[in-house]
Length: 283
Ligand SMILES: [Fe+2]
Ligand SMILES: [Fe+2]
Image (cartoon, rainbow, N blue to C red; front, side, top):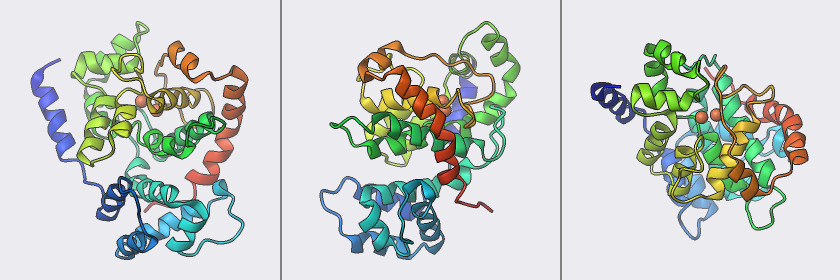
């Protein structure tokens, strides 16, 4: 590992595109105690392409709304403001996440489908927990691997060295650190920090492979960790081909998840993903 390489990686993070203006403004609204429908409509009015994608997602079979949602106002009434803002964020990142990712051997579309899969699995894991709002888990799960978009090119250049480490059974993310001096979790957290995401979301991305090392364990970290692992073992596009990932037993204990529940969700995720991930077409 050399410092020049790490400096180059960090300069690529700074050059990463900013969140589209409408997404950034709506994200800031999430922190406000009261938000009016008019404020949201005003922000989206200037981005018809984004609005069209948000409405496509809102009308996807996944949400099961029987009537057709034709406006931002209707979407807020039927799905709620928090969900609408999540769909705006998903629409903003969908196009970049739909590309192939070098280094990780991820073909076009797979990172997007994997990200949606993890979001859906995260919500399903906490749906029955009365003290939690399942929707709070969607966005950190959606963005958990965004760091790969920057780190992929560097992983590609050093893939032989990384693979000589993973061949010994060492997790891929540890090998990233050994060779590059950073990993896709840290880089993802940096991107989201730059985009002014709330700290809980940044931390969930930062620690998704290593929940026990975080100073503050949070439900978001635990659930994203578990949901990501759940999506390694079914047909919803694994994290990356052949990467070994370790399940934290402390997380299982903290969440009190039964193995049967894990299996039920695992069996349904692929169907839910096709209902939500495939509605956006990217050009
Ligand atoms: Fe990851
Ligand atoms: Fe992942």
